[in-house]
Image (cartoon, rainbow, N blue to C red):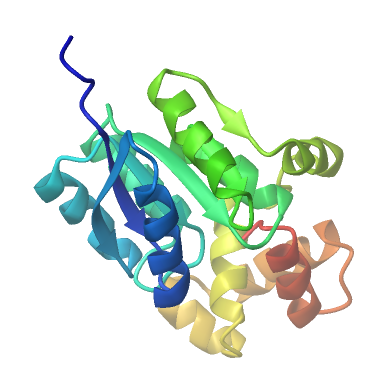
Length: 206
């Protein structure tokens, strides 16, 4: 009998020590081969194409593009590719965002290597794999209350820009920027925009 072809992996993680450790651990599995490694989210699609991988493991927080944004790009460009999102931060909003972007699995990075390898095999078989603790937290937290525009304004506000600067960057009037910020602050039960940004980031809603 001809042995099954190995599972071809793309690993995207900006911390080189973590990336190399994950690659080494996965490489010990007889049916898994790490073919490509990248440190930036905006390099994911090109690497997936050039190495013909069938599973992508994506860290959430990377330069160039987040893991969730990269997952959405992969879903559009390579719809048959399976996506596993890894995170250090168990934020419920990240789980929801990853699933909406097309991920088949969402796991914390410190999960045992055997669990990660098992998740890779299961998503390739068509299953969905979600860390149960994160799933329970996401259900308890509920949906992201912020609109896309409110999230966009909050992300820009995180830089410390004035309302005038935000308005110029986003092609909005200053009054509209104030309204978006005010609404976001109310929804997040925050005292000011800095606290609103902090709360939204902690929940994975930005």
